[in-house]
Amino acid sequence: MSAKEHPTRPLQCWAKAKEMILDHFKEVGIGIEDGTKRFATGCIESAQFLIAGLGDDFLYLGGEPYGGTIGADLAFSEKCMEAAERQGFSRDLCGYMRNYWGSMFLNHYFFTGGPFPKPEFTFTMHVCDAGHAKWYQVVAEHFGIPQIVVDAPLGQPGMGREQKVEWIVGQMNDAIEQMEKATGRKYDDERMVEAAQCQFESSSLWAEICLLNRAIPATVGLKTLLSLLPAFLHFKARREGVEILKEIRAEFQERIAEGIAAIPNERLRLMSDLTPPWHFVKLYRSFEDQGVVFVGIHIYTNFGSADYHPDGTVTPSKTPEELGYPLKTREDVLRAYAGAHLKAGMGRRLPIGWSAKEKAEMMISLYHHWQCDGVLMHLNRGCALSTFGSAETKNLIAGAGISVGVYEGNFADFRDLDEAATVDTINTFIKILLAKKS
Image (cartoon, rainbow, N blue to C red):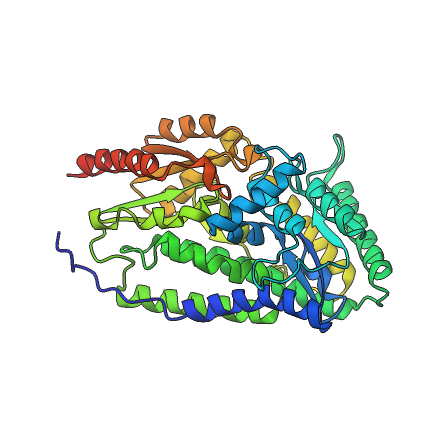
């Protein structure tokens, strides 16, 4: 196969998306220093639209992207990890969390080099029993600020669907009251409704972008796709987030129509499951000379709104408005958001609560959608809960006749991954797959 079979070119919207992301992180640090901005912090998968009701000058710092970005700077990450460990926190805790805590304990904000900015309060959805509420409890206690938590799993045993909706809605209403008390501001429902419309639209757009990579040849590789992810995560509840995702989608569609490829010599298509090692994300480009392209990743496709159908197909979810449920009031928004979590179970979007069977079914559907040749699974030491059941998932996927490779690492602590050994392991897997195709 010719090395120049497919035309390639850089992704034109990449620079704009990266600039937006960096500007956001800097805006938090600089805006707090000069008094022009206020902010809260918490899990990036929280209901960010709730923050919008506090005003345009109120920002949200997602802990996971901040901790992941630190993880890519090995020298500073090591200092942060050691700072957290000196406080008595174990190395088997969330890698994102330890990078974030360490930066806070060192009083060093990564993006400006100045002091770690003090939030007004912490706000998080407690989607991870291994850490989110505890993560921001430590932050709240460190700064002496209020902690606001919405428990987002499926509710208590015996609760019916409507009870669960009311339970989540009630917590979000309580959170709004706590935000008003913490900031001294009158909450603006109209701003919140507009932000929620953006969040629903952004989530559907991101899933669509991920699913577009089923084209042959793949129009972008996974490393490029992952570099665009923060533009969705940080701006999902803002109009500029919707607009940049529309630009990304349009460019993907244009590239596909023109046959523009991620690599010129595509021979083998692979997908992954969990969060990558951010300090070694170049892993996904390490095998391009052999014609290997990574086309997608399960967990971040689900960070958007994707629907998995009984026939094995996967599609972007429709927004409430597209389903005939316009969002006009606070009640409309809160009930729609709670219902979206309960539609197919909270575990359909996040790795918390997935059974091995559920995860395998979703990954098999994505495998066929992306027209893959194999699956590479990451046994992530940095998030034990998301990795729980991965061995059983692997067996179920293999039982469906799919080739599965495994490597062990950590998404935010470089000390838990041997780069050379990992490349060797994956290279062996790839050579087996290429031999099967020849």
